[in-house]
Image (cartoon, rainbow, N blue to C red; front, top):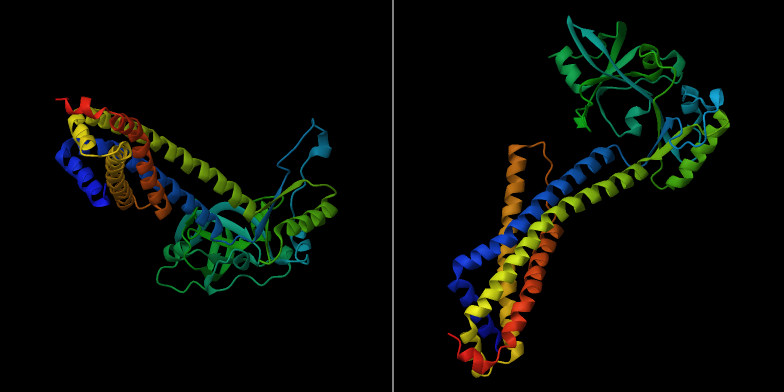
Length: 399
C-alpha cells in the first residue's frame, strides 16, 4: 500500500464520521488541555519563586543563630543559643573568598516626616548591604561608617516611602523620625518591587547597630556573606564555620548557601509540577478508553470493507497499519486541539489575574503531543489486530 493511499483511506474515514471523530478526539483534548494548564501554572510558579530567590544573586551564604539539627535531651544553660553579634560579622570580613559581609535585623516602626505618619518595615543593614544583594541606590548612598557601634543616625528610603513622605521633594539631607528617633536621609533606593510578599519599596534602611537598639534586639537575625563566583561554596561554608566555631566555642549556628536553598526549592517545585501533571494524566487515560471503544466499534462497522481490502490483496500488516494510523490521527488531532485549549486557558487566566505566574515551555507542549499520539497508538493496537486477523471470506459476507 502506497503512503498516499494510506493517507487517503485514513483521512476519508476520519471525515466520514466527523462527529464521532470529534468526540473521540475531545477526550484526548481535555486530557492534554488539563496537563498543559496545570503544568503551565506549576512551571510558572516554579520560575517565579526561583527568580524571586535568585534576583539577589546565587553566591550568597546566610548564617543564622541556632542549630537546625539537634539531638539528645535538655542540658540546661549549656544548651542555650549564643546570639550572632556585630563582632561576628566583622570577623568574617577578612576570610578568603569573601567579598561582602552584611549584618541584618528587621522589624517595623512608625515613620514621621512633613506632618505625615505611617508604619512600615525597618531593615537594619550593614554598609555592604547594597553590594551583597546587588541592589542599587537611586540617589545618595549608604552609610560609610566603619565603626558599627557608633553608627550615625542615617536612613535610606524605599522608593514608595519617598513618594509618600516627600512627594515632589528631594529628600536627601532632610530629617525623618523612625520610632521617635531623628534620622537624616542620605539615600533613596531604586524601585525593587515585592520579593516573596515583602515590599522592599515600602521600607526604610538604617544602620544595623541603630536598628538593634531601636528594635530592642540582643543579636542579629542573620549575617549574609557574598563570596567570589569562582569560589567553591563548600570551601566557603567550611572556613566560615571554622571561624565562628573559634569565636563561639561550638557550632550553635546554621550556615545555608543560596545554592542549597535553590536546589531544595527546585526539587520541591519539580515534585509539585509533576503532581499536577499527573492529575491531568487521569483525563488522558479516559481519552485512551474512548479511542479503544470507538476503534473497536469501527472494526465491527467496517468488517465488509476490511474483507474487500483483503480480497483485493491487502495483507494483514497493511490492514493493521491502516487502523493504527486512524487511531494515531484521532489522538494527534485531539492533542493539537488540547494544546490550543490549554495554552489559551492559561494565557486567559494570566490576563484576568496578572499576579498568577504562567509559563508553558515548548518541551512540555511537544511531550504532551507525543504522549497523545502514544496513547492513541496503544489504544488502537487491540482493535487493529482484530481487524487484521479477520478472515477475508467471512468479512465479505458481513452486512
